[in-house]
Length: 220
Ligand code: URA
Image (cartoon, rainbow, N blue to C red; front, side, top):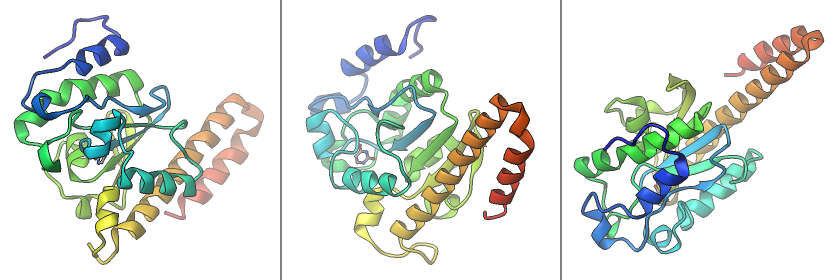
C-alpha cells in the first residue's frame, strides 16, 4: 500500500484505525496508533499491542508500559517529551510474535509515522523494532549497547521492557541493567543535541559548548 502524495498523518491515522488488511483485524478490539508527542524528536518503537493496549487503544499501558514510564522518569523523560509507537498496530492473538506478512502489511503505517516525525533519536525496544529500523536480522543482545545512524536519526536499540519483567541474564547483564545503561546513552545524545542547538543560536558561546560536548563524549 502506498499513500497518495499530500495525504497528512491524521488522514493516514484514520485509514489505520479502520484497517482490515491482515488477519489481525479479526481479533483486535481497536487499532493502537501512538501515544505521546508525535511532534517530538524522540521516538520509542515497541513490538505490538498486548491485552491492555488493545483494550485502551494506547501503546505500552500494561506492566511493560508502567516499567517503561518509570525508566523514562529516571532520565527525566515522560510521554509528553517523546512519542511511542509499535511496529504492528493490532494485537496478535495470545500476544504471539508478529508474522512476516503482518510485519510487511503494517509497514506503511510505521513508515508514515517516521516520515511525519523525522525523529532525531529512535529507541528500538526488542528484536522486532530493532530489525525493522536497522534493516538487519540481528538479535537485541548483540545489537544493544551502542548507537547507529539510520534514517537521519541516532538509533539506540535496547531490550523490550517485557524482557526486564521476565528477568534472566543476556550477554552477562540483566535486561533491566542493560536498559538503564542504554537510556543513559539516550540522555547523553539528547543533551549533546541540546548543547549543539544552543551553541548554534549563540555564536559567542560556540567554543565553550563544543569543548563541553567532546568532554562528555569521552564518557562513552
Ligand atoms: N509491548 C509492546 O511491544 N507494545 C505495547 O504497546 C505493549 C507491550
